[in-house]
Structures are given as C-alpha cells and as structure tokens.
Image 1 (cartoon, rainbow, N blue to C red):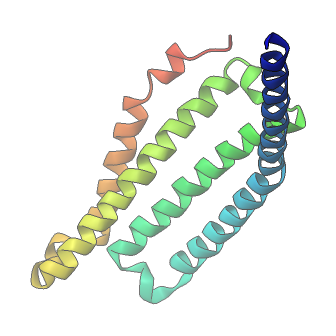
Image 2: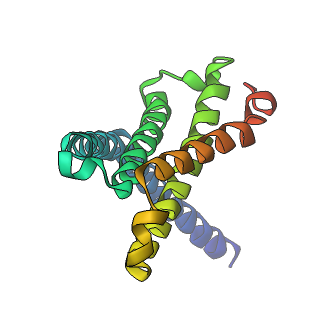
Length: 170
C-alpha cells in the first residue's frame, strides 16, 4: 500500500515537472521571439502613424491630432522601456546599473501614466465634439490640447519623482 502511494506521487511529480518544463519553454520562446516582434511592430506602427499625423496639413489643426501624436510618443517610449527589459534575455541587464535602473523605472511609470491620461483627454475631447458640437470649436482648440498635455506631463514628472529616490539596485 505504501509503495502504491509512493508510485502515484512519483508519477504525479514527474508529470508536473514535465508540464512545468513545457510551460517554461513556452514562456521562454514567447519572451525571446514574440516580445521583440511585438515591440518592433508597435514602434513601426507608432512611427508611421506619428509621421502621418504630423505631416498631413488637414490634420495639423485638429486638437485630436495633438492627443493622438502624444499617445504615439508615449506608447513608443513605453515600448522602448520594454525593449530594455527584453535585453535581459540576451544577458544585457541594464537594471543592475545604478542610475539607469531608476531612470528606466521612472520613465516606465511616467510613460504609462501619460498614455492612460492621454486616452482620457482624447476621449473627453471627442465627447465634447459629439455631444456639444456647437461649443466644440470654442472649448477644444489645438492650443488647449497642448496645454492640457503639458500640464499632465509636468504633473506626472513631479508625481513620480519619488521613484528616482526610493528605487535602487539590490
């Protein structure tokens, strides 16, 4: 009876180890291959979108263009931060260098915060355009969009400044 229980637990242990190895292999493949493909694709798409938004004369005066261009920049910045994390798989670890570690974390917090609030700002601008079309021209302007994003950026830079002090290499 005891040997039967030991055989079952040994078999279960071997099966869970095999499953664990397959899961680790899958995660390794996804991190080494899929992540850089997604990052490069995202950077390419954001770059093309940014160029179209900035170079198209008809779009240049719209406040929504300012928000979308800002989102392109913030998302690209976040993708570049992800790329620095991916470099760890290539044994190039930037997170073990004092100063660079704090800067990378700081930029990741700021860019993700600004990306989320950029979407909120864009959504509010579109809400006003749809629900108050007569007031949209006066309430939402390109200069107001720039001031909004500048205020959000300064707020994020100040709000997350504590990360430069409390984070460090351990």
